[in-house]
Every structure is written in structure tokens, then in C-alpha cells.
Length: 221
Image (cartoon, rainbow, N blue to C red; front, side):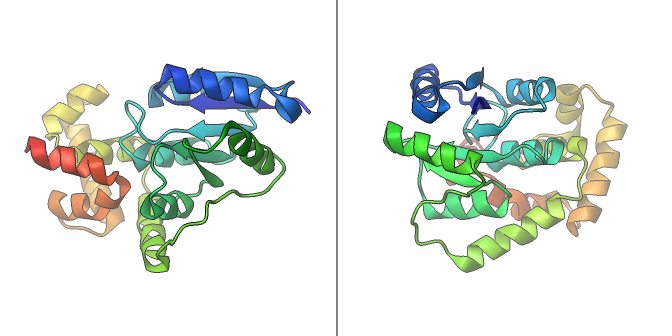
């Protein structure tokens, strides 16, 4: 059967290798689309709503960890998503599952294992590596995702900028909206998340960032 797949990853060599892997054996008749940023990914999804599967890297430009997965799930809830990552940390796997992905594939896996995992998802299964996943952490992430799920796509983008420590004026410029609109979004975000200020909002959504990204942000402050 011919499938239409999208690989969203900013490393050309990995994209090329994965493309070759996905065009072999049972997937030989499939077409493979490519994206290297979150913006390109969302554009491809808009242009190809019939996609059978998105393979999503968490570290693409614009993604900021799990914000990219959240935006994809928000805008295109019907498209199956599998996260493919260079890190197979149990915490990342737990958060990936809590946010609605159908599987997790480590980039270190063999070509055959990656292809087999993709086939399984296309056939209706989920694929998760064996990992010592904390049940409490996954449940905590589910609660965060439920709060964030009430945000609009634009509010989610504003929240992403808040997490990066950007001011209203900077957010307005980046999103090409007025500062008054940003303030209105921020007020709505606080209400929907059940927080009182930026600090509380950032603490709540810090779980959406990868640990290394948090370390980088702290080092820059």
C-alpha cells in the first residue's frame, strides 16, 4: 500500500537516510515529504491534510521542545504523529505519550527497526520503547496538556514566547500583532492555565521544554 509520510527534521543527512529507509520493502511505494522547521512542517500539513504519518523531531527550529508537538496536535489532531529523537530519556518518552503522540523512535535505532516501527503505526499500533517511565510524571504531564489544550493556536504561540522570557513588545513584533492583542492573549492564558502571573505560567509550562533547553535559557539570563 502507498502511504504519504512527512519527515520533519532539520538534519539533512538524517532526513536523507530516513527517506531511503522508508522507501524500502513494504513502504517502497510511499511518498516522503520533508520539512526542516516547525513553520515548514505546519505548511506541509496544511497542504497535505491526507498525510498518513508525521515523523517529528523535537529540536527543529521553532519547535522549542514539546511546543512543536502541541502546535501540530492542536492544528491537525487527525494526523498521526510519531516523535523521532536523538534522546531516549524516559522523561521525554513519558511527555511524548502524554501529549498525544502515537509512538517514539530513537534516532540510534537501526534502519530496520525504524522502518518496522513506522509500519506498525501505519497499521494502527502504537510504538514505545522499553523505558522506566514514571507514572506520576506522565500523569503530571497529562494535567499540563489538558490545561494547555484550552488555548487557541495564537495563545499557544504567545505562551511559547513567554516561556522564552520575551516581553510583550517583542512578542508583538515577532507575531506581527499589536501589543494590546498580546496583553489580551496573556490575560486569557493566565485564566485558562489557572495562574496569576508570568512566573507561575512559565513554571507550569517548563515541562514542555527539553531539559537541555532549560539549561541554555538559564545560562543566557
